[in-house]
Length: 114
Length: 115
Image (spheres, rainbow over the protein chains, first blue to last red):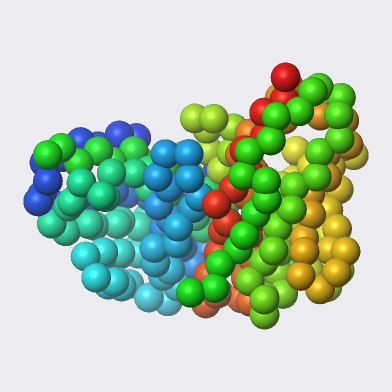
């Protein structure tokens, strides 16, 4: 089954504005992680939120998790040109064994306009 | 900050050739993963590895693929006979444990081009 479907697929905003990206998933999860990927580069971990948490902050990032709706949002405040990247959510399902994988969504391409 | 390192960063190979992608996970981590990302597509799980054996593998990880931890630091992905459709970015990742609070850290990737 598909997990971690982000929307929008692409988002363009002016520098200084806030960017909000959403992620929906289908099965029960253990945690949800957000990653950033600059074009052609590696996956940089941004933030992890556990299934028993509702909100987490890290610098300009704010992540929420609503397990009843099976959805999460990533908010980047006061966006900068350097925030231009693709953003992926990845879910870790309730494991059948201890070392379950994480499953990625298709990502949101964020473009910050100068 | 500790990081996962991968080599090579880019490799071009002839179809049918064998390729080995190398990874050095974060030193105290116990769980290791390979993922791949075909250009413009989503990141796909290939295999997870723990305690010197494969824990889980996806449908993509067929008999052409194998993984090995030959020593205490390296973790390799071998593709025995590459196909054009194996062209992708391959990511190695590691985590300390498999439980809910632990982040999976990814390397910069190895870009494989099969011609």
